[in-house]
Image: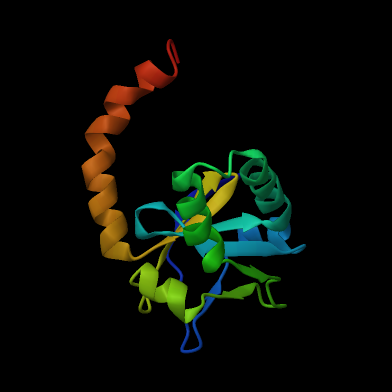
Amino acid sequence: MFSGTYTPKLDDKGRLFLPAKFRDDMTEGLVITRGQDRSIDVRTSAEFAVFTEKFKNASQTDARLRAYGRMLFALASEQVPDKQGRITITPELREYASLKRDCVVIGIYDRIEIWEPQAWQRYTADQEAAFSDVQEEIFPGF
């Protein structure tokens, strides 16, 4: 399970140190791709394979699914972190997420998201009230 918030920086080559607590789960490989809300999505290769299987089994006649697949897979990058735990964010993904140097890396159960800091700040500010309101609706009695 991935959780927590971290603030690593991109180096001049677009490399990012994965938080140490995430590295062991990523040693067998990972897939980096376009995420929701202008974030970057990082999943283990095994988790991305599960996700891909669901996509493959969905109706390819649905134009929305085809468009989603194009957006998702076109920028996907398969990688293995280097010995120092770094991954490379491609120029296209850095542009998509407006990443320059500072980043926010968050763990979300089965994946990691990478955000531009101000975008993450705006997102969390916008979602705070909804987070409080929706808990009872999604998890009654929790």
